[in-house]
Image (cartoon, rainbow, N blue to C red; front, side):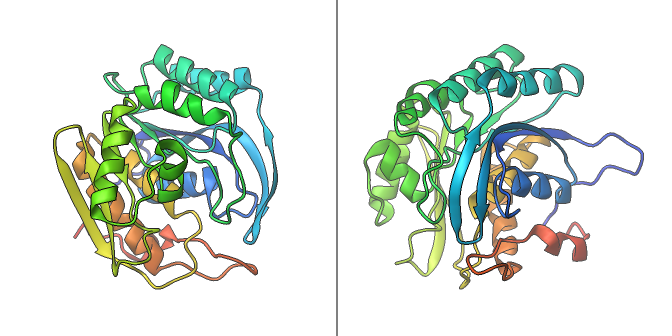
Length: 284
């Protein structure tokens, strides 16, 4: 695959920001975002919104960071360092979602703003453990989505947000339309969890045109952090000035390679691995 360009040693790389929760097991969340950004050659700035207590078999709890502290992290990073793209992950509560929406608007992050924003509306872990208070779903729909350049929910999150159960191409397109109607500039319906298909096909929609991005379905149970990794890779490409469709194409190919390189860890689901990048430095 064609990789993102690396900055020469001693030169300041492209910067991106992730606003999300931690993963104490290191497979998902801010850890996955930062790892992906680093291996894409992008400097990762972080705003921690929540701290989870988790390992490879599940999430046993989480602690929310005060909303003002979350917003202040964004404000000081953008004011001093500057970023070319940003993403959200686990935001946990209505108050944090509202604080993040407000500060992003303040500092120029979001659709129709200088800095594009990818929203990954993390609602639950891959094990089904809740990562978002139920009442915060309305804040995602009415507050966060309207400022998003692109939203990237998985199929479970689509069901919670729109009520649509995606089972095939037709329902995936209906879901993309419903997500777009909530205000996002682009909606990406990820097909990785649609196990009935022998391919993994993501559908991107801008209110006018549907674009499909297909990849092989990798036969592995080690897919922890796949959604975060995809979102972070798309964010890196956006930070380099890619169009949304081109950024999604890059992210799709990146996460497919990460699934191919995934590894066993602990007693549960191991992580996808961007470490393959260390062995493939060519831009070809």
